[in-house]
Amino acid sequence: MECIRQGQVGGGETHMLSLIENMDRSRFEPVVLSFTDGPMVTRLREMGIKTHIIHTERPFDFSKWSQVKELLRQEQVEVVHAHGTRACSNVMWASQSLGLPVIYTVHGWSFHPGQSPLVRQIRMMGEQYLTGRAAVNISVSASNRQTGTKHIRRFDSLVINNGIDRKKFNPGRSFKDIRQELGIPADATLVVFIARFTSHKQPLTLIKAFRSALNDLPDMHLLLVGDGDQKAEALDMVQAAGLNERIHFQPFRQDVPDVLAAADVFVLPSLWEGLPIGLLEAMAMGKAVIATDVDGTREVVQDGVNGLLIEAGNIAALSDALVKMAGNELVRKEFSKAAVETVQTQFEAVGMVKKIEEVYSRVLQGTD
Image (cartoon, rainbow, N blue to C red; front, side, top):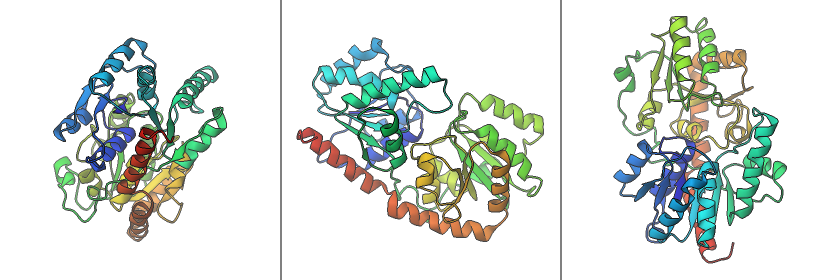
């Protein structure tokens, strides 16, 4: 059973979808448990994957654990793979009570420097509990593992990088004309952001940096795709600045390759990352990328080689990077080629899935 915290599409959800799509069905039969409904659930059911919802938006929601246990029994599950903290916290007790092994993939830790000391300590204790009881922990980046080793006693994990399905994210395919759909000029330089509208992903910082960069490149457009608690503030900020004709908003979309095909530059200004799948998808599509110099991201982007890295939260640095990238087509082409090569050689879905399947086999055989 593959377990995920939500039915909305984010990094962990995209990872799980890619895993299921590329899984060897002659060896493994995936069943999914999501703790909220959403477009990912719809997509799974369209794929013919049996998908269950037990609704909760809280970690360690003990009121749901007996339902999880009954579902595991009902589906005759042999191994549980939990993606992320919330999912793991709500399947661990039920799995252990049935003697089922749990594999925990850490898609970025639930604790981070922006939290109060008390909240951070509580989150660390939760992660200590989960990682200590998992049969195998998987980190999606080396920096994720390093953080765990630093803050969690006796933490150990395998590093299996996120992988991208290059059949789906292939710049040689034909795509819908997203620019025409959204009224963005075909000859404009288009900057794209696809992520949750949360302080972690820094959409407001991007809007401020873009507004500044327009002084040098007034024909740029910005497309922000996603939803979240900062979206209303972002809409108000754009309205107040009179930039409705330059900055476009869309909710989360299922046609991400089509959206990326329309882009010239992809920006991910996060405060921290595990190993950002959205960034890898953009690079697989041959997009010039700007990202912040944080943990998992710096394992993907080499500054000045396959993209630009900037200091997190630095509006001036992000504005300068936008001007440098959006204003120079030759630079974009060089980064584009290097970005595709990076994904092809290091972050490919088929290789990722084979490594995870090996973990499943070892756990089922009792060798882990």
